[in-house]
Image 1 (cartoon, one colour):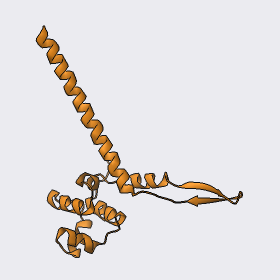
Image 2 (cartoon, rainbow, N blue to C red):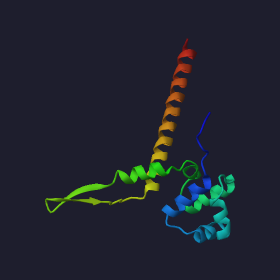
Image 3 (tube, one colour):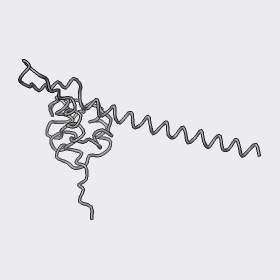
Image 4 (cartoon, rainbow, N blue to C red):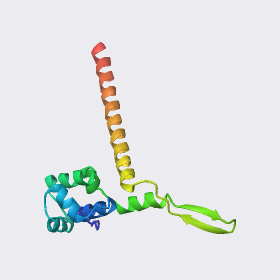
Length: 138
């Protein structure tokens, strides 16, 4: 019996909007709706594809990022940027210098996965072409 909950798309939209430092009003204007509609969408577990595409475009991320958004991944990226520094040769200071947008890192990771997938497909196509060539020569 599986206990995993389905992705809550509305919550993902809300978190990404907040990470982009965007208010519900601004998102509503960007997609041509009202702030109340955005509030309802963010409370919904699912969002139709057409609306999701418009929201993703307004937020500047692919729809797949919204569908697969993981706060754990974002916090993992952020936690890996914390620097521990020695101050005055005695005390320790912690620098929370996040010098990038975590969403950009998430997008970069998705793009790398997509590129790898495309290269694997091309390698398989090359193998098939090579084997077909060998068969045609016999």
